[in-house]
Amino acid sequence: MHPVTALLLLGGCAFGVGAQTLDVDPDARCEVSDDHVSCEHATILFRAGLAAREVHVQHPVGEAPAAGWPAAILFQGSLDARGVWEGDDGDAFGGFHQARVTAALLDAGFAVIAPEARYDGAYFWDTNVLPWSFAWGASADHRLILGLLAALDAGELGPLDPDRLYAGGISSGGYMTSRMAVAYPGRFRALAIQSASYATCAGPLCVVPELPEDHPPVLFLHGGADAIVPIGTMDTYADALEEDGIPTERVVEDTAGHAWLEVAPEEVVGWFEAW
Image (tube, rainbow, N blue to C red; front, top):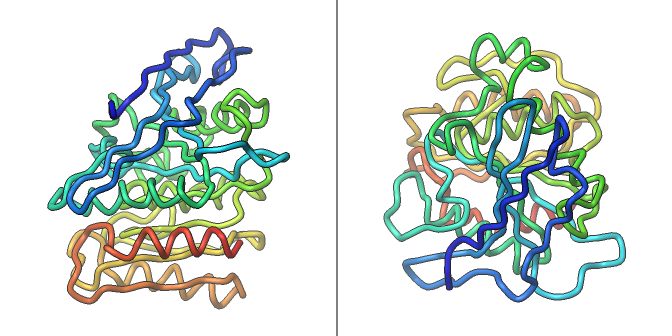
């Protein structure tokens, strides 16, 4: 199986892929072994203003439900877009388990969408980087997400249900997952945040402001030995959500560092299915 099926669509509009429709092979999905995961997917060259960004998409095997597949947007961590679709046992930051998350979601009937950060994924998301952390509306990543959501709503990413959207990610991608709740109210049913915290936090620096009333439920996965994003910053966010009556769950592996947890595939799928 080839890890990537390239399908390059360059739209002429300000956002999205124009009037063209994404065609994903319904028989291609993932190969999973004890030490390797590889998932086929379509790749779109996606316009957002003058910039272009790769967005990768795969649908589950079979016929879509009448309303379309539920869809999970997965955000890469800093400097590495590969891990969403392919991973080997022993990869840094639990990349093997991240690819297992993708395979598990597809097996459970969720489409997976993975936009790349800037510079072909060799960067991090704008969400907690000045000035964009406090001027999100002017950021390139905001333009990308607006276009992505518009394309999804228009059916340009295939038969997806715009009313059943979920998001998840690790590290920079985990902060970006939180940004979905802050900047796009009502769009996401549930979030899964691995090794990260609130949208504008960064590493040990974390202040959680007043949260939106419609903040979606959040699953937190974290390593107790994470020295990059201390677990206390996650707890600050989770505590604030619980105080506001927002459903949360914390899955902590005491000896794990800054990496996807081995239990992440089952936990993420279970959390999304619950909502």
